[in-house]
Image (tube, rainbow, N blue to C red):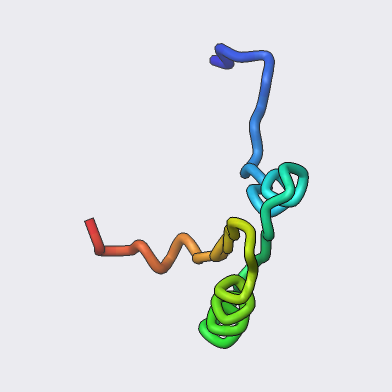
Length: 62
């Protein structure tokens, strides 16, 4: 039974950050996270780094 007329997908926080003049970037690996962190620390503005983590990464952790 469907109770809502709306279906929401994952939020694109990087796009939201950029739209509000915040540095936004994706990190898909440890290397890209380190790169984005280094770049964010040189910014004079706020920064958001969205990390893509697979669902399997959470298996057995709770």
